[in-house]
Length: 216
View 1 (cartoon, one colour):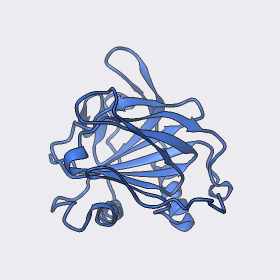
View 2: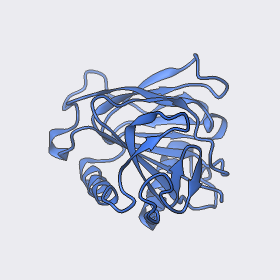
View 3: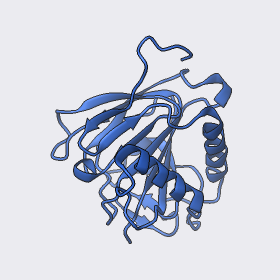
View 4: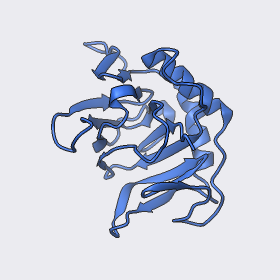
């Protein structure tokens, strides 16, 4: 949106959980999108995630550093083509640390490098139920970057999938960081608003890039 009646300001959603609108400028969004397109190519490319109960996630996913599957990590795509997971580039660690510094301060990231990326692609019908990012051994903050279509991001509490929660509008270029007392909060994406991506980005749908420290 070119003009805002009410500017979108930095907002603390919960202790340790911060939304920074427009953190990625258009040029950095394009660079990140180009990288995501390369990572999504096979082998170890974009896949449909199947749950232990036999269902499938509507958002498709590709991983870097370590491969996530419900509910653990592996060095190969154990629930897909079996290929070795793509490496996690050093520049993503730098990006994650910059994000945590801007959101929570320079000491929040800790000494261990960011070494895992989960990249989810949402089409117009995709969504993600409330869940916790609890398969890592590190308590370092999770960094979430949005590209493309706007979504409703539901950020809940650490105890239950039910209320209280806060719905946050995440647009292309937005940053959301959650750590500290909010590190294990339930969160999800109940809906995506199709056709809302910046036209100049050249993306139909939404990409969410989440960066984590494994602690392994």
